[in-house]
Structures are given as C-alpha cells and as structure tokens.
Length: 216
Image (cartoon, rainbow, N blue to C red; front, side):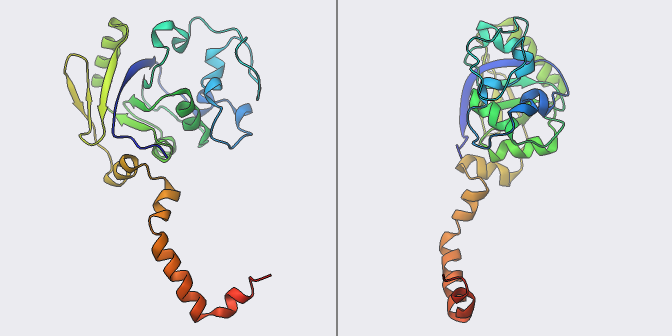
C-alpha cells in the first residue's frame, strides 16, 4: 500500500452532500477485484451522458459539460473537496479503488460514512474531517482561485492553504501510523513474519501429526 506523509495537490470540488458509493463507482463495474482500472468510471453517471459498461473504451464517450471534474481547471486534481456524509450507501471497497486509480490521494469533508472512511485508510487514501465552516471556507477560496492547491501534512495533522491559513484535523493514532508507513492489513501481518515462522516451527515439533496430515 502507498504511504501518505505529505501531499500538495490541486483541489477539485464535489459540491454535494450524501454522495453514496454507487455514485462514486456504479454497480455494473463491481465484477473485477483487480483494484486497478476503475478511475475511468469514477462518478460514471455524473461524468458521462451515456450509460457506461464494464471494459468499455471511455475515450469516445460524451462528457457531461456541467460535471465539475470534466472542467479543464480541475484536470490533474489529487485532492477532492466535498460535503457531509461522503461515501454513504453500500460498503463496496471499489469506491476508494476508483478514487485512488483516478489520482486522488486526499479527501476533505465535514464527515464520511464509517465503512468508507475505514476503507480509505486501507487503500492509501487520507480522509480529512474538517468542520462545516472550514470546508465552506475552502470551497469559497477554491472557486475564487483557479489552480487552487492545498498542502496536507499527515504527521502534523494540518491542511494549509496557499495564503498560509492552517486547519488542523484529528485522526486515530493507529490509522495514522499505518498510513504513514504504508501498512494495510497484510502489511501489518507481515511485520510479524518472524514470530509467525517461529510459532509454526514450534507447533511442528509439538504436534507433528497435524503437519503430516497436510503432506500429500
């Protein structure tokens, strides 16, 4: 998993509340579990004027000119600014996969749905919770300034605006450690590989018949 320490990036808006996971990545794209290739279908129903299908070439599909991420000023954005309860709905892990594959490293909102929030950390994305007032300030600044960027520092737990205004955010220490070190559940387990190998060797000596039963 990719670690997250510090990141400065262009900000794009998703200026609506209660964006559910089916809006983030519609259900027809959930057949694959490769974790990659979902970026082209991120916000598919908002992004395109036709209905998308799995494995479809999206280069010729008609774009919705009113959708924010289709505007030239937000191309290459890596920080998504949105409203409350982002990621509600079903628990599909494809939602953070799609956001990551598109290029988003950080999400900023007043609140996130719990399961989606947890899934972000497991996939190298930092979800930052700021107050409604702070998020509104960022929206206003972003709309007023094309090319608006934010600097996010996980270690310091800060979001810094171009004019030097600093917002602080809270984060669970364990989640923070895992994201700083780039550790998902498998990575955490592999940190204990020596202890696991020692246990298996000891069990083989204590109960060899268990292992004999597994030998073809």
